[in-house]
Image (cartoon, rainbow, N blue to C red; front, side, top):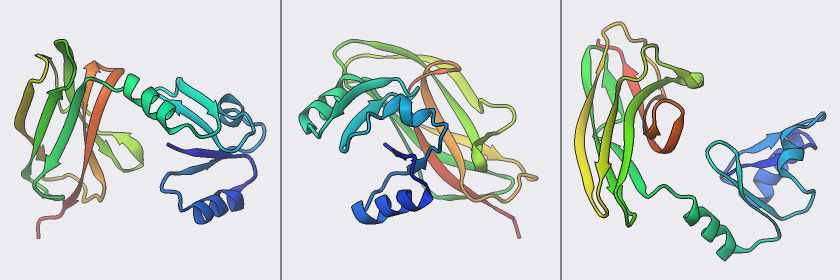
Length: 189
């Protein structure tokens, strides 16, 4: 979720403070591309997009049931959950984390899964994917859990907010669901 304003940084900050927003407010100055692509100039306006910014719901005024219905209609039937036992990893060690996939739908779901590393500033780790892609099928209600490991090289730079992203869909660009965990890489003393 995000909000867009053409009015400037001060307006974005005012929105954040006035409404206690927990999502970003984007300043899109003229000549505006995104503002006009998604805005009608009415407040409140609720526009929902998918992960590719394709509009899936667009309405003036607030209608919570309609918003929830649009979200549910566009959710992937397969959920992805990643959990790390730690938020830090040392150079030259393995970082282990748990992955759980579940098919909440009524039909079998076939997909590919792959793991990417993401450096700060959203730069991909050279050599992505770190694991996969691997094809899997989950029957309705089926849960798949595993523990994965990623080796942190000895010469990996100490970095805060290194991310691991597990995606499912069709490799490499059709992502239907994903999850991220953040890891801080620490120097070995």
